[in-house]
Length: 105
Image (cartoon, rainbow, N blue to C red):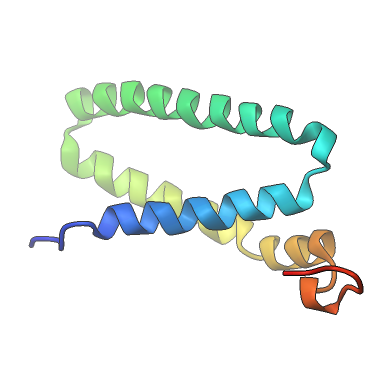
C-alpha cells in the first residue's frame, strides 16, 4: 500500500500550526520561551528514548508484536486524555477573538 507524497508533511505542518498557535494564545508572554524550550526538550528527548526502546523491542520481540503494542498504547493514551482536552482548551482560551472588544484578527 503506497501513500501519496507530501501527505505526512502536510499533516505535520497542520499540527504544528495549530499547537503553536494555541500555545502562544494560552501561555503568558513572559513564560513563552521557557514553555517552548521545555516542549522541545521533552519532544526530542522522548523521540530519542522511544527509538532506543523500539530498537530493543524489535530485536527481542520482533516487529509485529512491537507494532501491536505501540498501537495499543497509543489508543489507550488517546482514550485516557480525550475527555480532558475540549473542556480545558475552552476554559483556558475563553471567548473567541472576534467576541473580544478592541481585538483585531
